[in-house]
Length: 115
Image 1: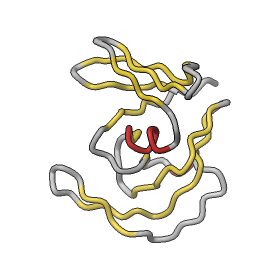
Image 2: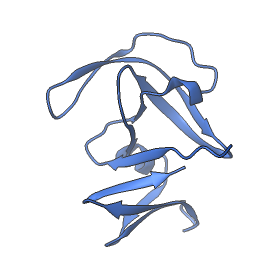
Image 3: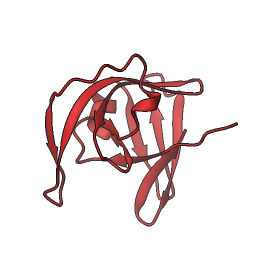
Image 4: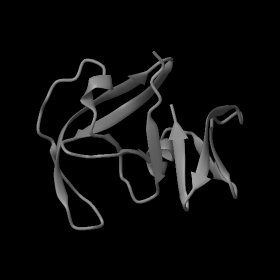
């Protein structure tokens, strides 16, 4: 069974976040604080770990209780020495050598990645 997971690229998101802890490696639940969303909704951050899906591992993903979408932080990618490039219909996550690590697409004015 192939599982495809949709992630949204979010320039306002401070850290990578998911509401699905089943893909977090060695997850241990621990309250770390709260996150406030643009709509003023507040949710609990209940830990973080690396997120594993297939052969892709994303480091330091926060588990946010009740979050209905997976959010990639553009800033966190850049802080990890990765480049995020946006085109009209596509986006790319590249390493410093310019190697394309992840490729996403744009629809309804949102950039998404399917892992």
